[in-house]
Image 1 (cartoon, rainbow, N blue to C red):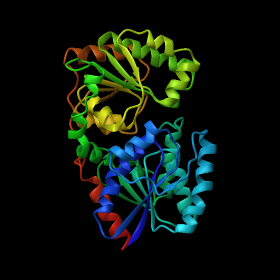
Image 2: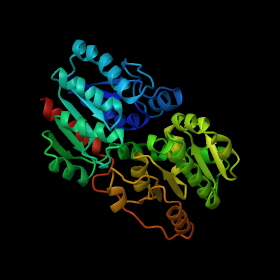
Image 3: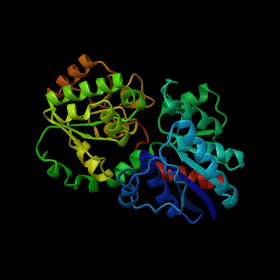
Image 4: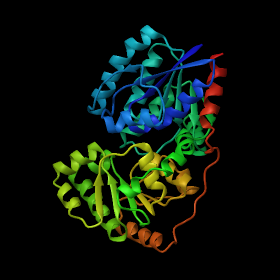
Length: 364
């Protein structure tokens, strides 16, 4: 039996590895070991996802905690290297674009362990984003590149990335498909007093939006604008909460009629909330994909997206920091005039099975 390390470190990783872990559990050829770097570590942002998504607790925890990017990557490498040296996995699977992704890929390469990168090839073409550096380097280090959309295949060809690239679909959508009925049965809307209401959901966490007072002020203005159209639920990420508190914006938001700040949610509650909302306003990558699958309008407050199929095919629009455009699109949504999207190819719930079958063939 071949041993595969499944790496997770930040909240979105848990939803991405869950279908892969389940698919590996159904085969006699692979043994899955979950390695949790602890990049995001709080019970709400980590532990609840293992419980809800029915994946085993990590066998290996590196417990690096929250640190600046360079220090965090260095500490992950330092703590992961002896694990790889002692346990000699047959393959290391990394997902997404977080610091844990590139750090563990570096260690794998150092010890000659093959690397598989899930969500390979995505590009924002914005080198001001730490995630873009992580994506580019991880793809260069990977032996197998599992791609979610056609743009990723084109990017890897254009960059002449040497690994084997394969368009497989989207593991985030696997998790969504598998858990949608359970999410729909969540009582989150009743708990928030939103049953039968038209409401918006907002999420913000990217450094470019929350780490400076100027950019955070634009987010606050955007939230106040959305609240003029719909009641807004903002599950507030710890990073965002700390920034807003430091800049004195928490009181401003708390005093905004129709705007409700809540603690980060579990997966079922969050999807149950999004699935019935009128619009999501966000800077998240994964939520652009989830809203496209669900057919929910998504207004992304970024200047770029590494997931262009959500714009060209799906229900996503890039708004940047243009409040006039934001207001115009909110008016369209209120009037039922927002664009209709469709679901990109292979976003069908079967991505993890395709990946695991390919890994079995690769390791045989």
